[in-house]
Length: 417
Image 1 (cartoon, rainbow, N blue to C red):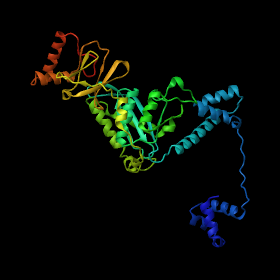
Image 2: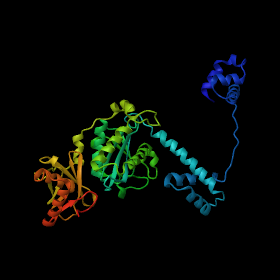
Image 3: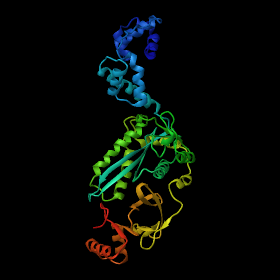
Image 4: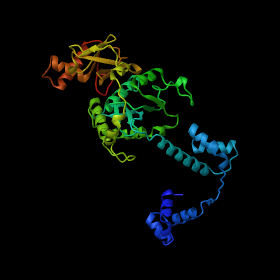
């Protein structure tokens, strides 16, 4: 029985006798049928309404269907064929498909309720992987976007990266904590290899990577790994991953990776000021309540996870020496100390503090390695301040013919022609 209508009917018991059911329905903002039903229950507390029982050919197979959907994420068609071939089901496919659809909807509702968290309790992390974009010179970039969303406020932090190594994940998480000004109690991840030790894990027992577990301990958050085949358990960040497709509109609209990084940063700023449908508020306004509930952290305790202790000083030639080879950087870094991280497939990434500068393929067998834009900048500042770009191109070509063991990477190509 609806308690609000029940209390009103009891409160106005005497008046009820004088009013018809239509008038009562108008006053209580409900249907006449509801008033009629509530009056019957009020006058006869022991009355139990009888519902017509319906049977279905699928009744005897519901447990099997639920197990296959929840545990193994099976499709309706695969379940239908299994029931038909092995369990003697003689009903239609549409009946199975309808039940599977309804069951998934019920599970999604339960998940949504479970993960509607209190302030400061949870964040969700994911990647937008291998997004391909083209700049205005038709040079292609394959990027990844690190994504994190606070559960209560939906406050977001996104960061462009060129790999998804564990070191990069540590750096992105630390940057996010710095951006939020604190850390939630727990963070939800999918079963990414940088978090979960796949060799030791199975469906019912997830083993967290040892180094990542230590990082979480030092940072001060609990790790939660969502169940396999159940990405909806981190639905807030899944929505953010889809939003990152907005970056495709910037094809041919940026000049280099620095422009692209700025575009991602500006998008992050805008997203935190857009109204989120589920809460009908902007993340930045709701974050005002959540930020004070986040836990403090020591950033210096986390930096060693992604910044090597050894630093490389930029020479007067605007180059650093790494493992016997030299790599150019913009001239603004001359005299400064840079850090280098090694990624997969022989790629190195050069940073100034936590700001990405450029990357190189170390498999190139040359002692001197330049970016074309760096080489031109160095030539202009050192010997040819008045030369045009076309004149510098000719100088570069002459140098390539005269000098051995030098490699100049032209934008969008693997080697200078």
